[in-house]
Length: 236
Image 1 (cartoon, rainbow, N blue to C red):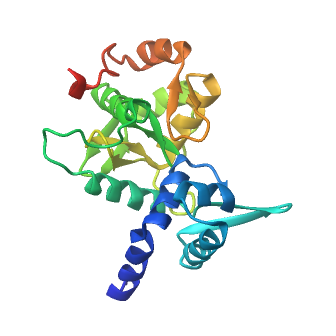
Image 2: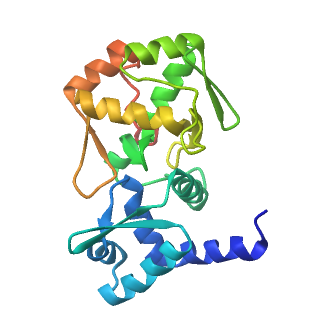
């Protein structure tokens, strides 16, 4: 049972602007050095070292040492999920204002730790639900029998055996779209498969994903996504 003191401790750690910027930088799913995180937070290396030690101690971050460098990453999907939820909550503004990231590339397609977010992530979830491959309801998701066949044909091997307690499929409230995209092991496998196929590519030092011409064709042919999925409604 989580106590109020434990909750307050983690909230206080995330609530510091420098630490919050470090955590956001790690939402791309890639490990970063202390120097890279210090630059993202706008603090000195010494200050960053203190922040990082606290977050490792409280299991917000994990650290790996390779040679002379230490690489920091989010401790797991649960940390990423908590951050994405807080980002969506923090971005709540009057309807006349745009919510979510200002960068158009992030709004179109980005990583949410290890799965796809933005309009691409939401459009994928919509298409898979419309075609009867997944069933979404109140934060939960279930892969249907036809969905298992579809994902298998797409090159994703699904197993009902839990991996470290992680669900096979769940939804995540999208920061910018305020609608669900797919997370869990399925969400991670979809991102890995689309990277391998060359449908999307990571942009350096960014959470944004570039959608390739091959990807545009693939999303239309394999997922029956409408051609206007990438249009930002706030720009109309």
